[in-house]
Image 1 (cartoon, rainbow, N blue to C red):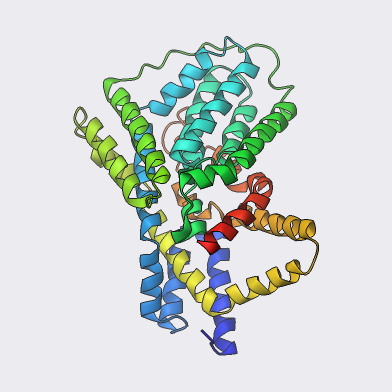
Image 2: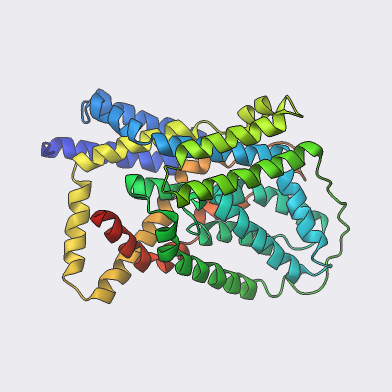
Length: 387
């Protein structure tokens, strides 16, 4: 679609201004307001036609359903103390060894990221870990870094491990078998290398023994039901991916099932979860879809193809290396900003709702996974294009 030069300049200006305001949050105005405001402005100025904007929003239905289901599952687990219990189990199996506790927290973070998405690790598991390590009177930094970085390193184990996977692959999501063939080795390498680097960096803090005494956290009946619901939901999502089904509807259904199981004993849980979920994430993502669609009209795809053609004229390794680096930098800057309004972590040690600081580590973490799977992504996209 060819548009006048002036219109293209206006689209780029409005879009980049909206994204910049989303990142900087002037006057502490939420990200969703800036993004949705920019999308509405593009429509009002007819820089993008209303039907095209509506189509872009509808195209993201699977993503909205997936995000809704994952947010409900994570909030349900948090409300019933599942992550507090998991962190407590880890610390009581560490035998007063900070190094052993680091390994256990890293393993827990890997499982939560793989089966419940990286946002569950960063937003829900991290504050639970923070509370436990404070009570144990150990330096919390290594454990917060473990939660923040494993949320990145394990985000390609399964398609459900990162909501951004649905956006990147759209209607071309590979079946689980193909996905594992492409991403399992890079993900494993990313997880192991991240662990070794963090363990080396934190070697001084992980010496000695834990000095504090941590009271046991008992999982209530409702918490046990929530845990069972989460396990069943994770199994259902992996099965859906293996069958090549869209992940949005199964995720929502799995969340509804887990909610119903817990509500059987705790009738107040649906309202608590509804209040705890950051629903502003959904209009934020919808606004981003409209902005991206407008940028496509303004030549974003053409610009990308020009860059790829230029890389194609160079050597294979230089092209892949440069492409992976660019993807890593862009992914690091934009990958999780769509979920930043869901970072309302509770700090149990201070009481009330407060960002714990570890989530900021999540949003600023390095693009190591993008680098490690850069070559695999090239093969995956090639497969999707030929499908």
